[in-house]
Length: 216
Image (cartoon, rainbow, N blue to C red):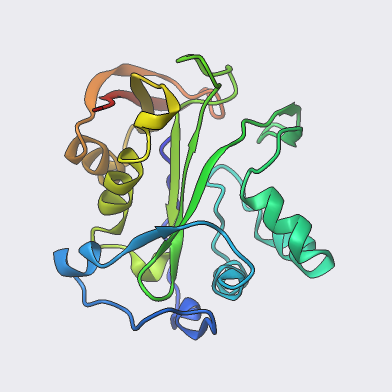
């Protein structure tokens, strides 16, 4: 699923207080988007992620996991970071409360000198198919105070450059029917509209399905 984070008014920019920042924030617009990079989650960058969680932002767009992730980080930062990075398999709780297999994959933090959000690729090694509880290969969540700068579009472009090594020939990507912003992000990165069908998480709503061919 191409993740969607509900718009909420946020005051201040908690991520700007991140002591792990590498450089100053970029200006808004296309030049700002070009300045972002995808970094692997690390203890050095963790304070920025924590600040975003403390603001109420959640990397999971179907349920708010901020409180449970904060508790896990405070209990054991190393183990929590390993979990955040999807470094291992195991079981995870789905939005309906059931336990489902977790797909290891690539997880990156979107960075412009401060923490901007997350983007991830999940897939079954050696297969194009995804299990029923996973609606798409890609998910992302940009923090509210970094939206409107083209960061999601650029983050997806950069992530696609890393896909050829996975063996995937194409990516299945979805977004909510009325999430115009996410649809634009997908289409700007070569997404071809396939159709719409009910959401696995919320059957009363529809998901738009796209295909992005992987370029060698």
